[in-house]
Image (tube, rainbow, N blue to C red; front, side):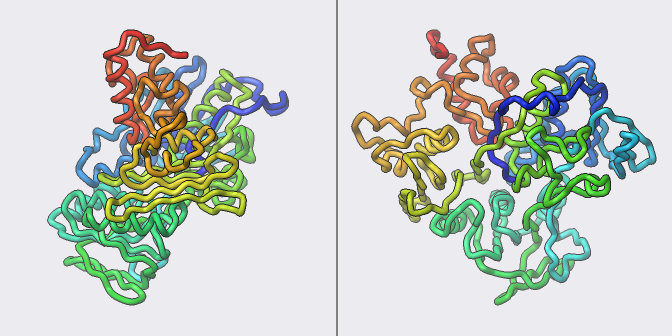
Length: 496
């Protein structure tokens, strides 16, 4: 899914499109990051009963940080979502919904129990794709997908005593899995069928630098390599390619995901690549909504946490009556690679037209690559790879459609070049504007952090609990920590 990394409440809906009353009982199918956030948002409303049904046997967790669990940087308890369910919210884990009766407004569980709803929310997420490669039809303990906590456990079990691993798939998830396993000391090889890594987000130049950086972290990459077969035994796994065979102790499949639409399709809802929703997050049945990875808005199917959480916020506002006019308006995505020792941010389109400026800089020896695509003095796309202090400024300019400095090198190279426009790359909290978005996943601005502090929060934990900053991908942790540190030593901080 990639509808964008933020969304905002849009213009008012006509009265005919507004819900007449708040539903009394809301059932949420799916206890992932989207379903859990919706339950939390709904819990603040009185008179709304919420039942969350999760197929996984444990409580919701931060799926983004699974690669950190692979790397040994986090344990399972560290990634558990700790937000309180709240009054009137009932969660049931290890429960599979087998059917939806739209006429009776009931859902049927795998044990035959039926539950009635006034409004149903599908947050069923997505499932890992297992490619139709000979040898993958039968499960094997040395072969695992990488999507869920159970997958992560299987990979870690297989990694016990292992010395090498293969990862099939050079997209975002595959690279995070590869770096995580390399962090445990395994020799890792990534096999990707396309000519460059992360082809949806990167260009060949960025990929070339990333390949070199990965090699320095113990990850080899094979590009434009098609897998033709897999064979696994007690001693390891062989991956047959079009031009060679690779052998390792385990194989991780990271070949993309597919929206989980089975329930919606069986219920007669409109389904394309995902469950089709409108700006109200409604499906073709006005009493059923969909959010997160399973939902398709326009031509885009979900995949990032920020839009899923914003969808939860918008839908909760509508269902509780707090803002019956709230609508979902996605914006362009910002993708961050969560891999230890590798800093990568990619955003927008890297396909410039004749009216665009296209400036870039590469220093492969230092693992640095930067590219900016600019139209009418505004960023339409960018890649920032490596240690570049201007990455935060680039994201802000892209997200808010700000005017880039006349001397593009200040952004491209991440250094001051003198003159009135020079301080574009500063990350000093005192000089950061209040409307700067610090946490992209939860759209938390510097001003929101300051207001939280001045309202009584007196520690990093307090600020995180009240604003949710850092609870998504975690890439903003240092920035939030720096702002809190600055606030703790300044008695004259104000919010304009």
